[in-house]
Amino acid sequence: MGENQAKELLRQIPGVDAVLQMEAVREALSRHPRSIVLEAIREELGEVRQRILHSPGPHFAVNHQELARSAARRADRLAAFTLLPVVNATGIVIHTNLGRSLLAEEAVSRLQRICSGYNNLEYDLQKGERGSRYVHAESILRELTGAEAALVVNNNAGAVFLALNTLAAGREVVVSRGQLVEIGGSFRIPDVMSSSGAILKEVGTTNRTHLKDYVSAITERTAMLMKVHTSNYRVVGFTSEVSLEELATLGQEHGLPVVEDLGSGCLIDLTPFGLRGETTVRRTVQAGADLVTFSGDKLLGGPQAGIMVGRKELIEKCRKNPITRALRVDKMTLAVLETTLRLYRDERQAVEKIPTLRMIAVSPEELNRRAGRLASALQEADPRNVLRIEVRPGFSQVGGGSLPAQDLPTFVVAVRSGALSANRIEKFLRRNDPPIIGRIESDHFIMDVRTLIAEQTEIIAGAFQRLVESGQK
Ligand SMILES: *Cc1c(COP(=O)(O)O)cnc(C)c1O
Image (cartoon, rainbow, N blue to C red):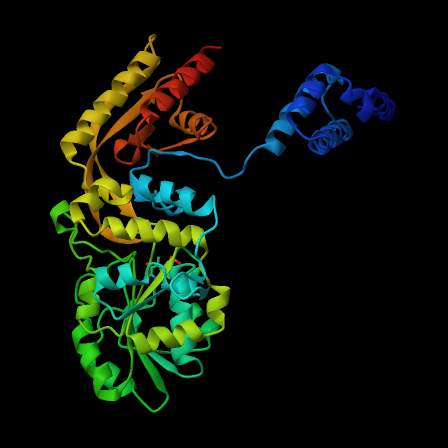
């Protein structure tokens, strides 16, 4: 394209004020703040200018109507929420990218009740004076875990950091090489250790660590013996690790605290649901850990939080550490956590009412029925049979770095289409409102019904109907 031609096209670009007068943009102004619409227009004009300067093709013309519509759509995008509800059709119950645990209804209504008014977050109603936020949820945690004391902070990474910084800064912490875990990229035991000021003393090998390895690592520089739950992986084959009981005895002999980072923090026995190998917090306390740390939003099924339970003297030291202030929990977390924990007083009730547990416990028969219902809803949304829809057995995962080697039998709905690739289906559903997240397996789009909640069958069917219609245009 010649220079003159480009100049001519650039002259055709309307000014901001002209675009502001156009129908589509005037409508956008009724929905969004003026500043956002202006930003959208400027970005849009800038993009048209760039396109002209970088050879726009022979038939390019500046279309004012189209430009206004495009600016209005851009304003919609700029003004939209960024944190959105999504439909989790992955079957991964504690999905780290999709918000981990869902909250129980009881917890959400309690949250609303506590946070839409004033509350006694830091007020002692007995004494009529300033109180501590850390008393909330403490007694229920003691009751459920059998520990002497408890402390709740922002997340489990914070709890581990706080324990290390309080009890071991400048001194050595003995950990097995088989337990130097990385969780989700940003939490790595060696890194948390060094940022807390504690010095990592690795013992044993990746697959085998023995009691004598710990014994010979203990010196006057040792501050703590630590065990880390290998949440998201398993070492199998020729392996051996030292039990918590043995470590606890060793710690007692040397006057050293034994700390276990449990990761998930399971409060009930999951073996009735076919999941083996996840211990409970209570058993860990009973086995002799002086301090146990775990998450609030993994298997516990509550809010994001880091929970520490254990010996009163150690918890008290952690509470007094000035860093606790930087890790402190807010009233929203405490309201949700206390309510969730109270549901555990009756285990059957916990499994019924806490979504994470309910989704783990749901029977294969029920999942089969749900998959059947979803498949028929999709069939109805596709009268011309563009899609091939089938119910199949499959496996779900607990997720959240919990129980990595164990899959839960489930039923999935698999969708394939000669006209639409699985990638196209996936992308269309991901951009739906609300977004629907599933997975692709050998050119099928797969939806696991385990993690769907009540009305989502209709939402999914509606999206597929639009997908099929869009494919026919
Ligand atoms: C998940 C996990 C953490 C981090 O917990 P957050 O609550 O995500 O901060 C730490 N340690 C272990 C073993 C974990 O599984």
